[in-house]
Length: 266
Image 1 (cartoon, rainbow, N blue to C red):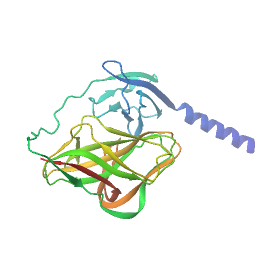
Image 2 (image 1 turned 30 degrees about the vertical axis):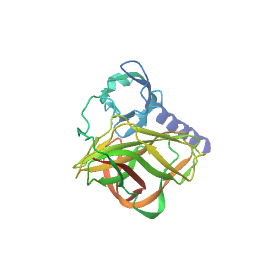
Image 3 (image 1 turned 180 degrees about the vertical axis):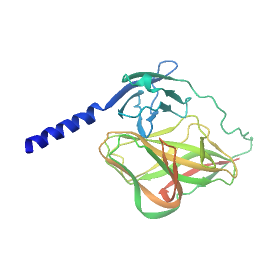
Image 4 (image 1 turned 45 degrees about the vertical axis):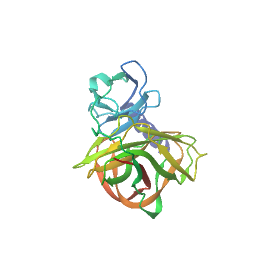
């Protein structure tokens, strides 16, 4: 009886293994350079390319939807099932040229100000555990009262046990839950288990302009890690979102990562 049961388990396991395809490939720009941290999805299945543009996505039998490639700096691209079912693909992305906030900055002296505070400290923290990349993005909502030029972001890492971990920050303009990036390139920050219990101020290299009386969302996600470990941030009471990067579904939160933002009023 035990032998029959063991054979049955092996057959079932093999059927699960056989009933999927593993799609591997490389994502490059038009010049052949690998594109880092591209979101790759089929239905609810999700992965992110590595720093050189390589990726692998295991797809169970029955999923035949297009494979979608998304990065805020490039035009979104889709591959039909007949193209990727062979298990090997090569994807070339074109740079996305679009107008960001079109605001003219005057020559008057700019005053630095805190655009958004962290909020009130809450019990507990917000963490990403044992993942190579996150299917979820989380962060605070900012209701803007002036025209601002963002200078930096500040937040604290409560704990990091990953040997390496890369976190991405993107600022989005919010219009009826439609999220539009206000920067051309994501901000990437590298962490490791040597950077625990530390405060981080991230200087912005690209002009990020925030418009008066406009709502914004600051999304933070893990795009690469050693796989085994955790990174935790102190939680603060303030309104925020958590967003599924595959489906785009958004859920409101009463508490989120404590992240503040400073910049210039103009």
